[in-house]
Amino acid sequence: MNLNAKQADLLVIGGGILGTFHAYHAIEKGLRVIHLERHQAPIGATVRNFGQIVPSGMNTFWQQLGRESLRIYKDLQTEVDLTVKEEGSIYLASNAEELGLLEELSQINEQNAYLSKMLTKEQCHARFPSLNESYCVGGLFFPEEISVNPRVMIHRLHRHLQEHPLYLGCFGEEVNELEVQADGTVQATTTKNGAYTAQKSIVCGGTEIRTLFPQTFLSSNLEIVQLQMMRIAGDKTVSLPGNVLTGLTIRRYESFQDCPSWGETIDNWDPDPFQKEFGIHILFKQESDGSILLGDSHEYAKAGDEGILPFTNRSDINRFFIDEGKQIFNLPRWDVTETWLGRYSQTSDPRGVVSETIDDHIHLITGIGGKGMTAGPGFAKAQIKEIFND
Ligand SMILES: Cc1cc2nc3c(=O)[nH]c(=O)nc-3n(C[C@H](O)[C@H](O)[C@H](O)COP(=O)(O)OP(=O)(O)OC[C@H]3O[C@@H](n4cnc5c(N)ncnc54)[C@H](O)[C@@H]3O)c2cc1C
Image 1 (cartoon, protein in one colour):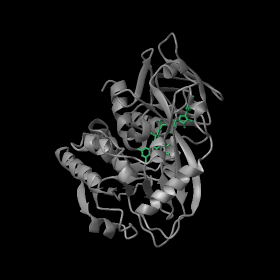
Image 2 (spheres, helix red, strand yellow):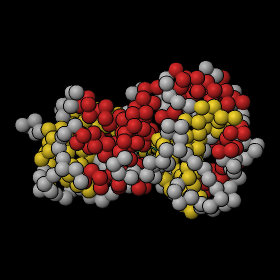
Image 3 (cartoon, protein in one colour):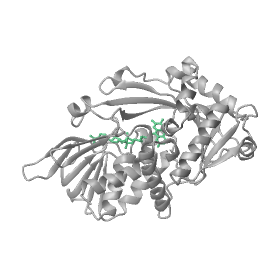
Image 4 (tube, helix red, strand yellow):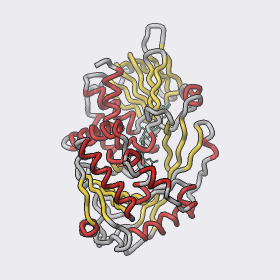
């Protein structure tokens, strides 16, 4: 698009996964899009996460959107290298109750025509030679699931979109005012270049709730969730392919709540108080350079009260990750090379997302929680269809 053009069919605000895929699906429909992100490159949840694309962990509604996302990522990967790795996801059970939940989930998946395969203890060990003998009693494998490197993926996608004639990406521009004008168009005023107009606007601002329509967000059921993550050093001898999810994740992810023995398993569970307090479950993902992402913990604040969340990494949480991790894998090195915090917004609304329309033409879409990398691309496709009345 002509770089001087400040008019389009759609203004998308927010360069994270949600905003970017709304922009992508809009141009796929032939709409002219101006995409505004306040930083030169996004620094929010979209670049701080695991990059696990795991529809298997979600309830039936969101799983469908996640499965659509798998198709979108895989299709896009044929055009541009988005770091998609097709290595599947595996859930490792540490005892009979967790194994029972895996068996039940595999039956539910069969009814939903979602491919999964139970693995014996021996098959899990064959896949992960460094798995501790005493930890794993069996696993459930989802061969169609994928992962991406989140620190790389979104930038490559932005560069890819910049080549499209219907797309104009304006990075380093914060929108500080957004309103419907008398002629029915939406005008965005930014800190840098003045005014952009379009027929409609979609705002995907992640955890930013104070700049645009703060009253709407502050009176919603929005919560800010803070997570802690770490990276441990790589080692040539270690191979952990795909997304690795473990016993505590089986006890946390929504999909397992549909299993017949879920209630009994959770009722009989006496969790470690520290693990419970910080909502810790243990996930692993090995990056292409061999390093391993390990996490995560969860701390919560009502939107508007997020100042109560700590701003430093807790060493006791890091220690818990490592101690727990050592029970699962016998790795030659556990040197921590990085540790960081990330935040996302989530809602207690049963729809699982905040989606509000202001003056018919401004759509606020946020609060997708911990499922944005997985369900975001498919969800954005459905939203664009709905907003443009297809
Ligand atoms: C540690 C961690 C691990 C996670 N792991 C996974 C995982 O493995 N799989 C998974 O599916 N999900 C995961 N998630 C969740 C996922 O990362 C989020 O759901 C997703 O990134 C949210 O994307 P978003 O676009 O809504 O928000 P963000 O990524 O926060 O993007 C919002 C963007 O809007 C911009 N913005 C805000 N206001 C304005 C304004 N006024 N003008 C211009 N720009 C503005 C911000 O600068 C920001 O770049 C994880 C999250 C975290 C924190």
